[in-house]
Image (cartoon, rainbow, N blue to C red; front, side, top):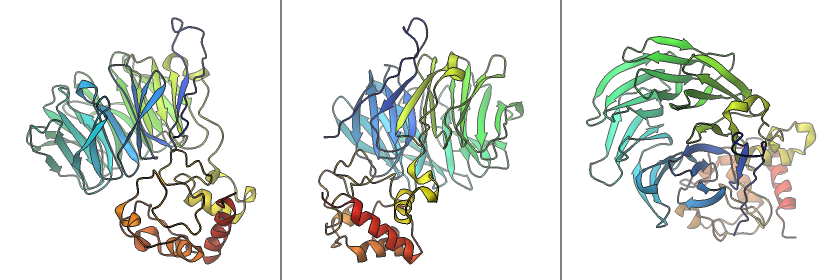
Length: 430
């Protein structure tokens, strides 16, 4: 069993003085989704295919997805919903230790929203649709069509009667939550919109776009009210806490901007990491901390009141970001193509793919404890110089169609040769 741990760094001596900076460690890949719950737990979804449910810093791992988990949310009765790159929405009962597939798209799912009554879940997918799923099966699934590109985010109105959706087609649209019928096109931004948040009284909507725009639009007309666009792009994550009157905005350059919604001024603009994006943001339930995820395998949480003086995410760059002069060509190929998903040593860690330790001469789909696709598990492939060369020459999607390996190729023969030589040395049983 993996050794899992929590690293907590205390900046202040007592909780009475202020909230604390802390990290949650245990995932084996970047954090893609975060949510806070009413009972004080934190949910995390990761590139390692896992959902983490954290109580007092200790994780309960929810395993069942077969690809990266992009979105997590709390439902009623301590249940959890999650979705990701395996096209599925899953419902979990952590107490009973059970899970079931709630719904499925025909492409990746990026975001989720739970209705105010907790009875329905909306999903935003690369298949250009919004999915609407009944938590307890009381209503049939609903597929909402109308966007001309990827649907990137969804939100329910406070009364649950409407669904707002954002898309890479540059629009925000409103739908009837009962029927899926279009209500209106609210915003036509011109550039793809990645994230949205509604005010508690439905008087405004905040959105972030690929061109770096962070904007507040009035409701119900959609006219611009406030603009907080910085010279950074794109905006990738956003969360709003009504009681704290704060919007947090994360971008591709690693900044977290906090907007005061009472004065409509920027309260802080904190560079949370020197390398990589902010992919996920969520306020703590009391609004005093902001949780964030990026390239690191850990979730970071900062006190909102002292963002400017808080530590950054790890300054240690991912190995694949190092300059070519710092590593051999074979190692560089591994770091760029394989390192996020695979470990080299016997401890596979919590990764999206199985360990590569003892790779050569091993039958494909045979590492104990890893959940393989049926395609790879039932294949007759043995990993050798030739099969690894073919894997990256043709690409996994052509060499092993239906496997979970991402679509990628190494087109230069010398690069493949150097990668194989590196893997032979680093994965040998020793």
